[in-house]
Image 1 (tube, rainbow, N blue to C red):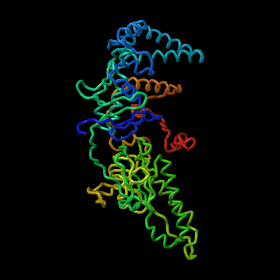
Image 2: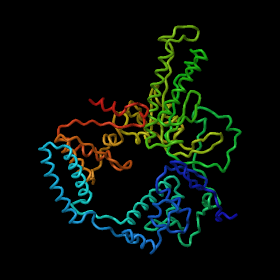
Image 3: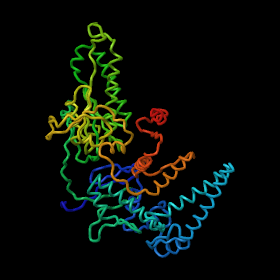
Image 4: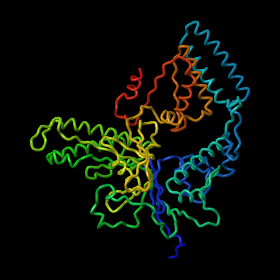
Length: 539
C-alpha cells in the first residue's frame, strides 16, 4: 500500500459520566465534560449538515430551526433569528423615568414607616426598592450608557461559538493534529457545520450508531517518548526481559506530578531489627504512604523496595495536583515520625533495650511535574513515558533525611502556597541539565490561589465589574447603618469572584471593621465544621 494512501483507524468520541474519551491516531485522552464537546460531538454525527445555534442549545432531536420557516415561527413569538442586531435598550428612557419616580415614592414611604416602627410593611418596601435598583444597575453600562439587549439568536450564536472554540482548544492541547483537523473542518456562527474544506479529502467518517473513523496516513510517526526503565529508579523488573510490547498499544498524554519517597539508611536498620519486626515497620510505612496519597487524590503506582512512587494527575486529574503531592509528602513524613513513637519501646534484635537506642525510620521525598505519556508497557500495569519519574527519583536521592525536595517546575505551580528554601541548581545523575531545587519547609498558611499569587507576583490592575462593586458598596453602606446584609456572589470557576471580593476589601480598608474570611477545602472535606473552625481561629 502506498504511503500516501489513507487507511481508516477506529477512533472514539464518547461521553462517560463527567468525562469524554477521545482517541485519534492510536492516542487516547480524556477531557472533563463541557458544553462545547457535546456540540462538537453532535456536529460530527451529522457531517455537512448545518444547524442553527438555537438548535444546538436545545436537546438533540428537537425540531430544526431552518430558513424562512424558522424566522416566521420565531417572529410569531416576538423573536428575531436571522438578524444579528440587538433587541433595543434593556430599559428605554420612559421606563427609567418611571422606575426612578417609583423609587422616590418608595424611599419617602420607607422613611415614614421607620418613624412609625412598621417593620412588616417596611420590609416589603425595601424588597421593592432592591428590585428596582437591580433593574436600573443592569440597564446602565460604563459611562452611564444604556445597555442593549441582544436577540435570542445572537445570544445563542455567541454562547455556542464560545463553547465550541473552547472545546477545540482543549482538544488541541491534548492532540495538536486532531485539534488542527477539527479547527479546519468545524465552522461556527449563526449556523454551525462540520465539513472538510472544499477540495480536500474527507478526514473523518462517521460509522452510524457505532463510532467515528479518523482517517490518517498509512505510516506511523516515530515515537519521541523515552520509556521509564525500572533500573533508573533502583529496581529491575526481570519480567521485562521476556515480555513483548505490542506495536498497536496506545498512550494518553498528560501533565503529571510524580512523588518518589524512599527510606534512608534501611540497611543499617535491618541489621539491628528482627526480620519480622522490620517487615511490620515497612508494612506500617506502606500503609501510611497509601493513606496519605489517597487522601490527597493521588495514586500509588509502584512499591520499589523501600521506595514508593505515586502519581498525582493520573488516573484522576485536579487543577492543583502539585499542591496535593506536596501536602501528601509532608503528612507522610509526620506519619513516619509517629510510627517511630509507636515502636520506641520494643526490644532490639538480641534482646537489648529499646528506648533511646532504637533506629528511627526516616524518609526523603522528591517531586517533579511535567508532560508524560501514560500507556501500556511491557507489564500489565500502565507505564509512564517521560522524564518526570526519573527526575523525581533523582531529586529524592539529593534530599536530606526528613526533607521534601521539589523541582523548579513544581515550584512554579505552588509558589506562595508553601515556605521553601532554595537549594540552588544541582546536577542530578542521569539528567543532562542542572535543575533548580527547593526544599519545602511548611505550608505558608495563605487561603487560596489568589492570595498566594498576590504574595509572590502581585495582582494585575482590576478592570470592570463596576456594577458588582456598586452593589457591594451599597450593601456595605446599609450595613454601616445597622441593617444586616447578605450578598451571594455566584459564577463559574476562574471568572473572578475572589478578585471581586478582594477589591471590595481594599475599598473599605479605611473604614473600621472586622473582616473574617473562611472557605471550604477539598483537603478537609471529611473534617466536620472545618469552615466554622477556620473562622473561630481568626478571633
